[in-house]
Length: 190
Image 1 (cartoon, rainbow, N blue to C red):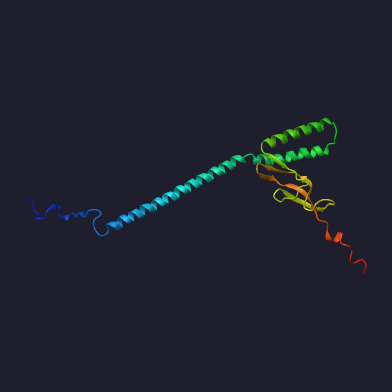
Image 2 (image 1 turned 180 degrees about the vertical axis):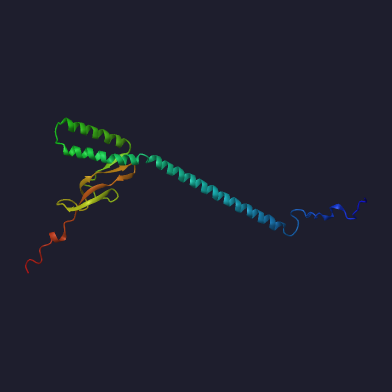
């Protein structure tokens, strides 16, 4: 059998490569400027992403520090009623040299000192101005000689743990004497 011979060269079917050198031609400066702008935009994106990552890491560290700082808070909240029970027991026992009273006072004082070393501070605002950030008013009573808005009795002490209020103090606040009680009876002579 005879082979057919083609007259066309073998490489004729391949496309011709672009032979224009880079940087030549009317669009070359525009292409370089566009590439430079694209690279700058990408750099800005990466810098923003890096800044966001740093912010996330900083917030995560702050949250971890706070969690560690206040890790004992739930445990202390559960101990507050025990401390209250000791104080109520001491008020109920007769004063004197009773060994039971001395034992209860000793345990109470030891517990209070341990809690104080851990950062627990009592809020006992007797005679201080009422502060809604620290106190819950359970009553307003007109008290002769007391400045209105002053705490005259602490029903339940409050506590602060480190710089947070763990429990607000329950207090009785002096109220201003009522206007009707201090004014002369205007309708009596009619």
